[in-house]
Length: 255
Image (spheres, helix red, strand yellow):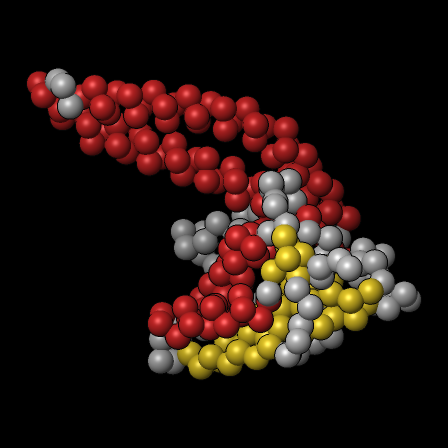
């Protein structure tokens, strides 16, 4: 593994400007788009109910169902874009990270293939994080899914939680993280890794190391948006053929 580097510091000026432009565009249009989709979904729902009283045109019902599904996918896409750009609505509260990691372990034990070994650890007596619990769960699910897809032939998936100390001098993220204590959650794999030319752009929405048909490229960008909006940070280190390590740093509950 190479030395850990924070994603934002790794973005070149062009990529950083592009991220800011995308964030501003999504913020400005999301409200209008959600209103439009809301009207479409409500109207289609009424039409679908009315078709039950008109059997002579019941053949339209599958078309309306398809239109409803597409509209709901549209609203979900806008929500994911908002999460990627750090404008998603979050409701932070004290969260037991050790419990979150344990529950994630139980879920993964049910779905992981035999070719992927799972290692999960958490430090004892961790302070509670102060984050949106559902958003944290979605973020970890996205990071884990990335790791799984990077190991099509098998490998090792490691998840750990620990206390993170941010010094006053700071490291590469010192300008972003205030000095103090945080909780860090690490998701690492022994998979394909990320090419250096792509490493600086993987936090951008729609940028993916996979085939476009298999991924919209929201996993890391959503994790980055969640971390920044939660007053935390996201670290990434990766080498081709040697795997990827993502460290999510989140604030702890106040006194």
